[in-house]
Length: 262
Image (cartoon, rainbow, N blue to C red):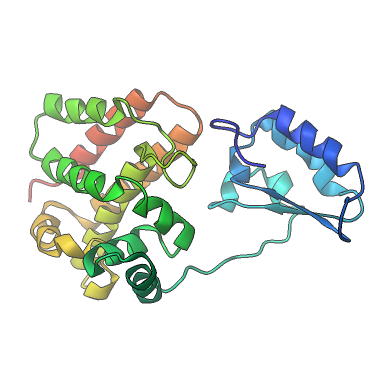
């Protein structure tokens, strides 16, 4: 089961509950996977709670989510958590080069942008992510010298014709606002690495390292940390179906404020 549009709805949960009431047709067990379980509406989660508490015999329920804290605590408390470790960046990059014919520079970007998930890397590979990423980073880098009016235009432009969910949360293969915000967050993370003297091997956007080193003087450490919090909040607001234009306007103006005059 996966989201029908943007959420897993109560009708889907009721259908799953009905299916689970019958014994498996083949094999000893039925395994039901609830993809992106955090997208369940409150009504759907509550309807699923009883089944999760007392699953019918011969049924195994698997809930997947990128962030367990986005699930209702009542659901989390009734699950056994199984954490999957990300694949090593170098190993994934070599696989993309060998099996998909990706050039080494793009393979490095894909393996880091996907955070160790091969499935996400393949989604990114089949999309316009690499081209969009260049534009997203350019928009962010020019945000701090832009006027307030120009910053607001950046916010408006970022939402025009865009789906909000992006590659991690959708099967459409289209990039979206969540991809842009994730990319912006890696930029701030990289600035923290540079500013604190971390290993350059930790930099996710290694292809723009010289630009990162030039930009870092604009920020205090606290401003970088607060900017990451702003982007996390924007991502959460989008998941909660807040107005994308208002979310982005608030985000870009707050990010602009955290850049020091340095």
